[in-house]
Length: 366
Ligand SMILES: NC(=O)c1ccc[n+]([C@@H]2O[C@H](COP(=O)([O-])OP(=O)(O)OC[C@H]3O[C@@H](n4cnc5c(N)ncnc54)[C@H](O)[C@@H]3O)[C@@H](O)[C@H]2O)c1
Ligand SMILES: [Zn+2]
Image 1 (tube, protein in one colour):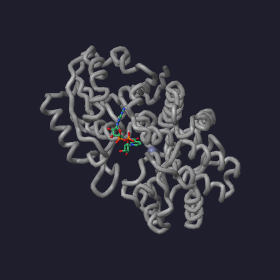
Image 2: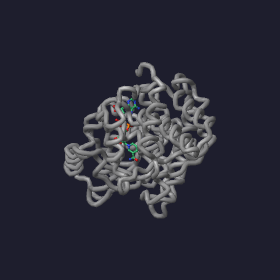
Image 3: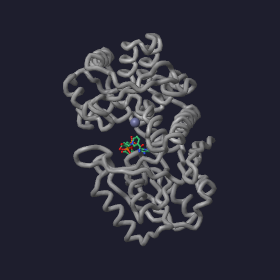
């Protein structure tokens, strides 16, 4: 079991990672005893793991439940309003504790509902996808989509605790497991050589990836994210490094209207692109670039990029909301465990990255 501290003064909290943590909720959340809990989840996650969760919570206080539909398109203003309505109907007051139980969609939506209800009530993140365990549940970013842009409406609202129990991942579809693994690999490349090595050693396609290794990898990624968030909670500088692989990843998601790649798959392609661009700019040794590509490929098949044109991708890059005065920020690796922020990535660099990506044909995705 790992306990990782996120050091944010009065808003500090612990990320608990380990098998069986769901059973230990009454101990882990002891300081919230006697409060009113409201679990926000969807039918799928609740059907698989909900009873296990609520059994633990009931030791601490009264428990209400709000079910929302499953899917990114429900991370919306309409669903947010329905969640707020349910809070009002349940008579929740300022002592409420919102428990976000699901993947990143639930974490973001329930987290934003908690941030905005009565100017902010307490939140506990209990992520059930690998992506949510290593990324979205830690760091306090919460929000919903606007019809015209993803994650446009949001807030920073740190949880009181995060509880990641890898036992729930046994029901996760393999594609979702791989999706989270690309974010773990990202963490390794940007700041943890041991984590990078661990991902190099994971089984091909993550088939049979053992639970102890998964728990270690989750803890490693959370440690890295916690350290960065502890120094730069609101993304004034350092936290931007977590966007390694995301500049191009977001562009791929945009041009395919979020219908082709999972977020992690798009980030996987973004890691390959970042390695190719860094090598072209002579920031990264060819052998290290090859190691990054090989580790990304090892995680498994992703939908290919051959059919995507350069121009739509360049247009989408220009619209990245983090673009500053038309210059697109790119995080590029300079070694395993080290990255740099650059604003000088040219059209030719992106074209080069795309041909490096197209050369890697991924297999069927299941
Ligand atoms: N706030 C942040 O810092 C941050 C960071 C990264 C991503 N995100 C957001 O996270 C979202 C993506 O999250 P995601 O990849 O977890 O997707 P998701 O929440 O849509 O979950 C993927 C699917 O897995 C199902 N599921 C969840 N847990 C399961 C389990 N244990 N067993 C079986 N099925 C399970 C879900 O119901 C869903 O159908 C996006 O909206 C993205 O914007 C936020
Ligand atoms: Zn991401």
